Length: 394
Image (cartoon, rainbow, N blue to C red; front, side, top):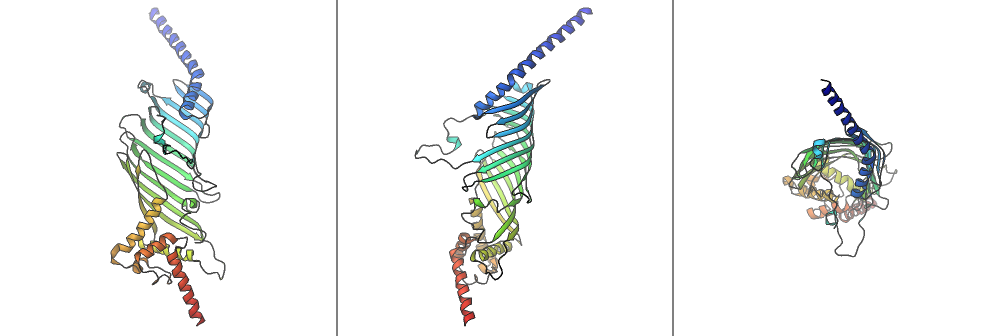
């Protein structure tokens, strides 16, 4: 009996010494190992404030900083011991508290070389991410900063704050697994004004490149995003002071082909006050006409439906999709329900009635002059004003 007790305590002591050795090894080696691997993979300077090993093998990292890309208050890692035997990075849980991610989009550098790469997929030295498995990822109180320097000299910054993201069964691994996600966040457009809200929920299969998701963005500040569509819209001439929109997208993907059915709804618009005695400009009258066209087509709502088709591994979106949908909306109105153009559109401005009869002329006028005063409607307005002035003189 005494022999078994001695053996038992001997085993306990050996295990304690072994654990202490492993623990000390991890404390002194894991931190530089993590820094080295991250710097090698991202080609950026990485620093870690402190690293703790919590028995048995949990890791807590504080003040992680990846230069120009990411700052994180706390990262808690719970590894999967069995999963590590697959040769991958395998985690049971990854919790990230107060991360701040920054991404800057710059205009492509000009080059005279005809063989220069035009996309990430054509780079000669493509970095392959390590095989990664995580049962659950929780991101709390995060911030995403998106800086776009391609739309205007001053750039435009879009922030998502109070970001909370939950992901389950994430496999960056050649295996068919369904990954679920839920995302919530707020978008501060301007200081002192109402914030937008973003919500996304769905699933994806990274191996098969299938997905299904819903994205909702409420209270979008349309004026804040003006640099994206300033080349075909003039808000100043239309005297538009503010505009709020809601966005909804129902996304389906199969075999890397993604179709996103989208709806953009104008929920509120505020016009700049016109000085007493000043007449409305052409662009303002055109804007009123176009808004009434959309109200007539959508039971009083100003709604634009459009579809985006892209690739799951290389998603692309631009405001040209919205402009094209705008043109299609007018084309649909011209052809629909057996009505003629004036009946469907119900244009409120009498100076337009009778001046532009053809469907092609109307589309050209509205698209090219919707807020920037198109030549066709502009000409009609001028003729109407001249006619009214002549009648008054007579």
